[in-house]
Length: 397
Image (tube, rainbow, N blue to C red):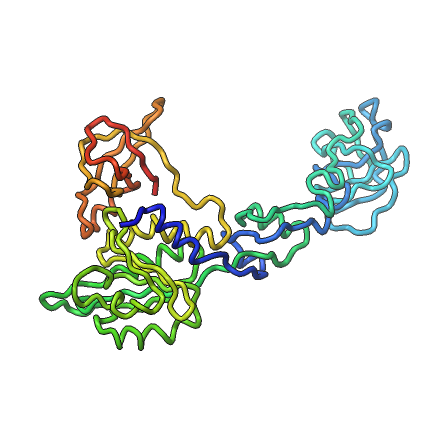
């Protein structure tokens, strides 16, 4: 057996880095910026009013109340702006350019709101209610750094400095294949000995949640020739092939039989659940093969695929948040294997650690208990039992 960490390193190295492409801002949400982005304009790009009110010379309103003639009206978006002459005011709207000669804005609430003449009731100091050129961003400076995840604020800033597209790590295209002659696609009726296929649904949704694309081939039977005939033509259009099932030590292990000697290595990883694993390249395409039991699939995704996919797309934070928690009941674990148990974590207000209790047993077929879990309890390889009240490591899902 090899360690969980060693297998994770191999899978991550297999994927490498996704190519860099330019995408419109509307298509880049959640992706990672591949290069530094420079501001094409300053923000604000000109001195402008922070309030609806009146542009004035501060010296003209040093004694109040005072009445000034309104010499101009400046709405937001006006391009040509006249100079403010001494002893006058310009009515100005929020975001409108500050006229030359003005050094302050008086809020409309501190006036009588006049249109021809305005009675100003409060003084203003130079700079009052003015947004200065470049106060937020200076033209030509790095406004977003490579490695930034493009959320709403980042995309808004990119748009604000004049960008229509951004260079990002391309979302990976993943082919998800579920194998097993016993699998049936709903809503076909089940015959004795058959089960409904669920792994491809789980895997595809988990992969898409990371921002990747997922193509699904469901319920490939345990026949090597058919497996190769169905999957091989699709490899040219994907970045990764992920299979579930057919990798154990028994007979009719279609994935193992089809890909042994084709560039894929099958191995036993020191973990529970999810011991049988495989990875490599088939026709030059990265391949990750997972066990068939549904809990093993989800745990394997968390342990290996999720960090590898995120890393390939440029994310720096690829690990789930890790906390310590006190167990609500005793647990056992097979010696020499890292056990991942479904659990429910509760934060204890005012306490350094929270509490966590297992949900369901260790069986890799117990999928229902996963729906009741919000974390994975991790028991390391050198631990075979823990008692109620012991502290354990928890990965928050």
